[in-house]
Length: 341
Image 1 (cartoon, rainbow, N blue to C red):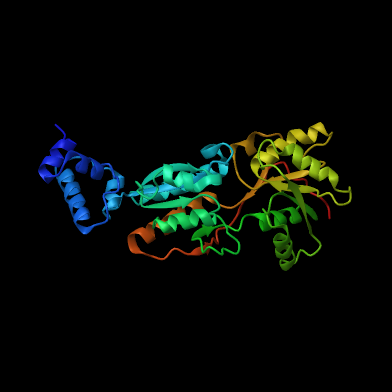
Image 2 (cartoon, rainbow, N blue to C red):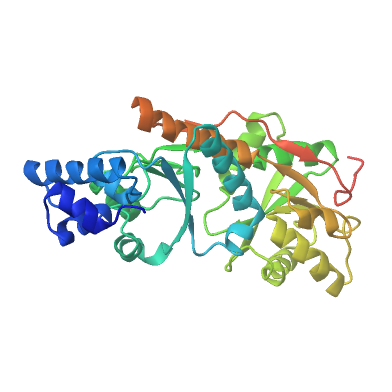
């Protein structure tokens, strides 16, 4: 018969409530005698075959051998989102290769403090966190305050908060280069808030010798998802005919929805407007026409970021703000028109 908490308490010569607090990972105090007692309770539990709570192991300095992957609750489709499912695959593969378990969580972007407290991230059942998104000052401060190791896969531009990350610059320049080769000289990007940085793209384009190429922002005030096509089309139609791009790049949801929106306005892809998705997805393969994709290897980014975190946990290798040199993937389909320049 498996050992119970009563058995552990009796052998450790402590009360049931004390053994229960330790074995369930509750904070057992910071005095040296309290920690010594907690370690003894865990030692006896292990010897008796009791499965100690992973948060309890972390409480006394032992590794839980778990990594947590966090995404924002604002992400449409959650883990079903093609971009983040690729991140998940990469993180999961690296965890498997290094014998770590994986804990999935979605955090409340608008109130990370409440999420942090409710999910008890300080008394965690994992050793570190991979954050699949932007890390706010509040998030970084909270995690550092409680000494929770973390790494992001998001670019943080000036990075004034010194957020450790392994990130891709995105596929914008590769999209422009591919579109340019196809004869396009006015290339639009669906722009949500400050992303992508249109001026930065234009500077990169000119630095790469494509000075006759113009980058056109297609701003929207709604999230770029399956519901955003009408907003994209409205922004596109506001432009004068001579200013409209011949190709638009956006995420796979927006591009897929745009195909239907174009038909509403008597237009079609690619004859009237070419489209490029910045993320590969099954959706890109079932649309009509199928969507061309130019995208970074997001799965590989997730793998490397997780490896960096594990190297820190096991070898104390410092976590840095590191740009990925991984090449973009180009998948040519039917949504880009070839134009004779």
